Length: 157
Image (tube, rainbow, N blue to C red; front, side, top):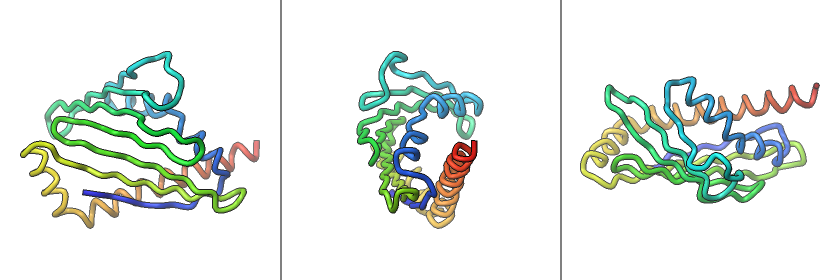
């Protein structure tokens, strides 16, 4: 199952990529939401091979996920591979400079079940595809606007 969305951001591509690569901020945000996040290697430089293990509660059950940064092509793209109890996910973020001050961000997420329970989960998600696609696009749009706002504030400071 695949979700995708794209947004145009009023900020230079290098600035957008730098904001996307602020992994410490994502870790802190996850911790504030009650997700236990552990980075695979604290001293590793930002780039391919970074890993995170996360544990969280979803629908009353403890879930674990392993996330790895498998592609890091500054300032064009990032790819994350995730594995969680029978379900694989690939998240790809591509950036394209539209002009010196505008960037198009494309985000694609693909879910692949490996077990029967995961297949049942993905099948149930397919039934709600329209709603989930709208929610995914809305979250990507909110994220893009937040990056745009940060860029504007930094420029004004």
